[in-house]
Structures are given as C-alpha cells and as structure tokens.
Image (cartoon, rainbow, N blue to C red; front, side):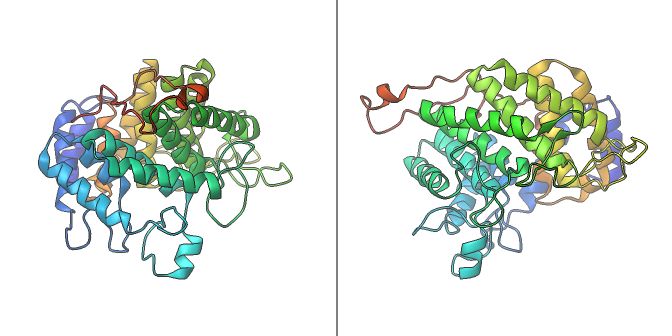
Length: 372
C-alpha cells in the first residue's frame, strides 16, 4: 500500500481506521511476503527470529498456510536453544561460544516462551509444552531474583529493568495460567509488586535505579509499555484491582510525558530545568508496541483517549508502516488490538498441594479469544 493511501486510511476516523480489516490484511500481506523458507521462515538476515511475525501467524492459525509458517519458524528457532544448560540465545548460532554466554536475554526468552505456550494451545502438540517447561526451568535457575523479578540477561548488571521484565513476566503469567500453576502465578505477582515499589516515581513513571537507589537514566518508553502490558494481563488473569490501576497510571504517564508533537511516542522522557520534556527520537518498532498496549488498555478500561492516542501514533508512522517488511508484524499486532485485543478472562490456578495429587501432565487452557 502506498504511504499516502495508508495515511488517508488512518485519517478517516480518529484513533481507529474506518476499515481496520483492510489495514490488517495489508500488514499481514507485507509480513507474508517477507517469509523466507530458505532463511528459516520469519527470520532476519542476521539470523534472528521475529517473534511478532510468529505470533501473528499463530493468531491466524485457522489458515493452514499461516500455521505452517509459524511451525516452521518455531522449528528453526528451536536451533537457538541451548540444549545443554537451557535458554535461547537471541540470534546467530549456538556454535558461537561468545554468543552462547552473552546473548541469553530475558526479553527474547520471555517472548519465545509465550509463543511456545500459544503454539501448544493452538496445535495441541505437547512438544511445545515441553520446550516451554525447559525455558521456564532455565529462567528459574539462571535469571530469577528471589526478591521478585528477573535479571535482564544471563550476564550483566542486576538492576531492575522494566523493558526486560515486562515480556518475561507477561509470559510467566501466560504459562502459569495455561498450566494452572499457582506457585508461578504468585511469583509473577510478587515480581510485579517489587517492580512497582522500586521503580515507580510520580510523575516520571517507571524508572531504572542503580544499586544505590538513584535514578540511573531517563525514563524509558519500553519500560512503561512492557510493564504496562504485564500489569494489564495480571489484572485480567488474576483479578487484582491494583494491577489494573497500575496499567492505567502507566497509560496516563505515556499520554502526558512521552507523546511528541507529531503524535508518536518518544523513546525516553526527562524534564529539563523549565519542566518541559527534552526532545528525543521516536522509533517505529517502539511505537508499535506502545500502540498495542494503549489499544489493549482501551479494551480493558473503555477509555477511548488511549485508542485515540494510539491512532495518532499509527498515523505518524504511516510511511514507515507502508514500507515495512517483517517489521510490519509489530504494527499488525498493534492495529489488531484496536478491534480485537486478545485479552483473556480470569484464569483458574491450582494450589500447590492440589498439584501433587494431579497428573504430571498439565491441562491445557485455551483462552476463548485465541483463534484456531
């Protein structure tokens, strides 16, 4: 789709395209065209799988061609798992020892864990559950902080990082709900509480602090977005009102402090001496994640201001969206959330004492709004 045509489509209705399905189809076509079976499927030239494209394919899983693309890419991604000690490297080759040591990250492992659960739910193939369990076991042994939360990578600093914790806590909740695991649900909620207690600072939003408790850098958009999505999911699955309120407060900070004059969202936000926000760049991929969260927040709260802000950000990146290839997948998920947020209902979790009396094979929970 030409950038002008896409911009006109986005401008037809504030916050939500008049023909959202047409935009969905166009973005899906861009992702589909970027599928490369010789490279491994939805995989970049640098040998990194694109999780958003796999998720999009699984959401379109009623179409056999899309499901096959997802399965083939997951099969290729399996080659990035360290079968000896566990966990996925982000990309490249497991034969590179330097990569194996340094590139096992919480965010990419979290997103791949969630994909494995989703693939298990869509296909019923227990291999995906087994790989998900291996990933969880590795994260508990290597990344988990007993106080709550996860370290951002196998090596590196040990400060709380919202952008890293958001995806893995989101996945942790999805895994716990799918396997009815009350123990892991409790750890996820403990982690969400710790991040809020240590990182939330009004009016800046979520911040990163060093070992001395001082703010280490400017508030980051991705800390708000990824933790916001985790709080929102916790509110839906576990029913805690404080998590819903935290997600709402993060949404308010994004509107007040991260929006730029063009309608997009700055990658970071920090006031200068006069109190105004310093100028910072806006990144397409980060804005796609922000748009998705704000559309999900509208679905959960009914507050159309968030969807309107999401629509302005989408229009601001119309040219980038029109020429995107695999990157279009994040935007496809963001636009989809404007009319189909894929938010689950309340999950049931089995207490630890009850788990011991049940079969070792977990039951599969299929959320009602996961397409098959």
